[in-house]
Image (cartoon, rainbow, N blue to C red; front, side, top):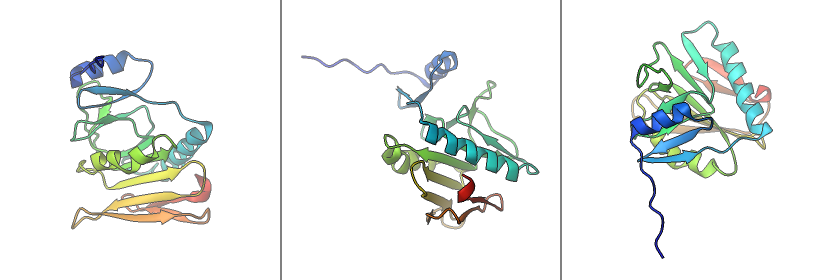
Length: 183
């Protein structure tokens, strides 16, 4: 018995298909991966984070983006984070301006099916992005936020965990904080 061959795509093929698709796919190493839909809890946390960030960054050169914006990482991964922030001049892969190359902060709301990937392999992809300074993982089913901050001198990532609704998570890239009780 033979196994079916996996169809391989070039990045250009992926982008052409994705731009015409009604559903989202991640892309890596020639393969497209269908993204699962989210729960109401997942959606609410992502919206709350986006709204709080938008309010706090209104007078800054930073833009808060939702999960409609694709990000391409130096490893070749194309992904759709739940929330991302870009500051100053966005850099895009091409004139379509739908693939961002220089996020400063990426926030993922964890799901049971993606948590291990978000914490492991996906984080390793994000670590290759020179513009990325902060990576935040938020539980949707409890009060738990993991905040990774890239250290300027060493490039190492410092983890701080927040587990109280009374806590405020600082985002040093912008000099603002996000109260966990609001997100």
